[in-house]
Image (cartoon, rainbow, N blue to C red; front, side, top):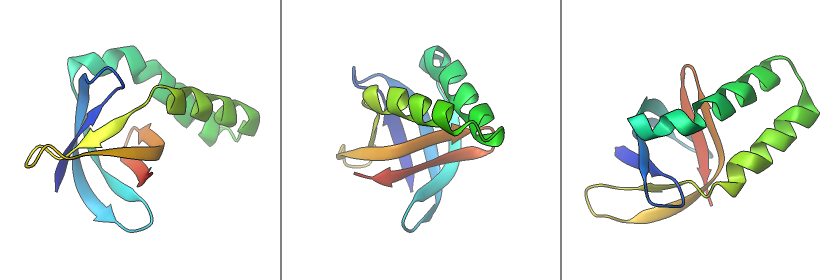
Length: 97
């Protein structure tokens, strides 16, 4: 399954190629040029998690959540809200809201 990741303004910031879907959706993330405004935020989040800076991780997760990301299935145009979005060097994960 392929999905598009959009921000709250409806701008496509990337494409997701889903590789697993259980309690979380996992996949490969291919950013569009519009992702550049969010790239450092996700990089900082990943680094804080790796460094076990839990207060900083919580702060960054709240900031990411406030940006209103959602996914759209391009085959049928259905949009779905997501939570716990993480974009890392090796992929993407999120949960259905």
